[in-house]
Amino acid sequence: MAVGSRVTVVARPRRREGAASSQFMVELLGTKAVQGEEPPRILHFNPRLAGDFTGRPVIELNTCYRMQWALPQRCEGPASRPDDDRVDGEIKCEEWTRDDGAKTEESSNIKWLLNTLIGKPEPDKVSVQQAYPFAEGKLFVLTITAGLEGYHVNVDGQHVASFPYRTGYNLEDATGLSLNGDLDIESISAAHLPKSHPSFDPQRYLEMSEQWKASPLPTEPVELFIGILSAANHFAERMAVRKSWMIATRRSSNSVARFFVALVSTCG
Picture 1 (tube, rainbow, N blue to C red):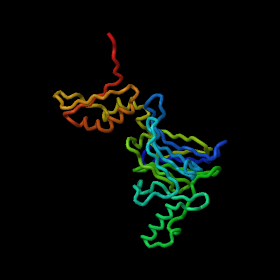
Picture 2: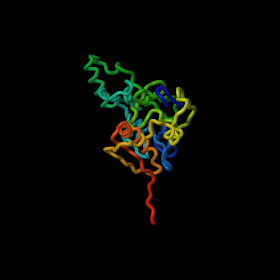
Picture 3: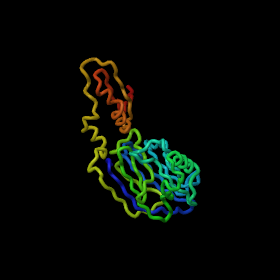
Picture 4: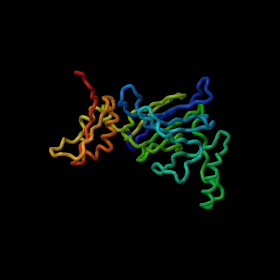
């Protein structure tokens, strides 16, 4: 994906047989760089229609790399606090009401305080309350848009959540879409996608790109030599090193870093 790219899914949640409630996942995936492992989940969008341990509807957003989940962003009904970081000017979680139409106590208290500070004594008139955006059997239109600072999720034309890009991922790394769970899909469309991306063949990209290649060995003595042991299938880890602190060694005239890949001992 690139800035301005968007993916639109038209579908309806369905009740799973024998389950109390349905849930589904919409995920943007990266390129699988390690054999035997799932590709990284650059964006994991997981609505749980009757909640999980909370017993209330929830939307969880997260990332997963090398089968390790990061800290989730949970949208549970209250809007994000005013002092929370925004994503391209959007709050991370919009407010919604419960099935009975009641607001959460925390959300009501925050809105009352804001209205008091700005001189608006009628909190219900500040914004229009919206219900949880998903319901079993109800058709929805979900759009994920890539912004400058993160992904933005809209459902039926309403902003629902924004998820900042996590450290270690590039926007262009999202090259696949996965839909799983209790979902009947009507259509999927995408717009403003880049025409090509080098990560479709990461090994070939590394060979062709001068940007990530190590600089030639200097002819003069160096002050620091860094040797990095790596297994043959740890290509993703080596690329992460090349894109982070190894950049400084390539710019330095008195330090050198080299990978030692798949070294084995022999007898005799």
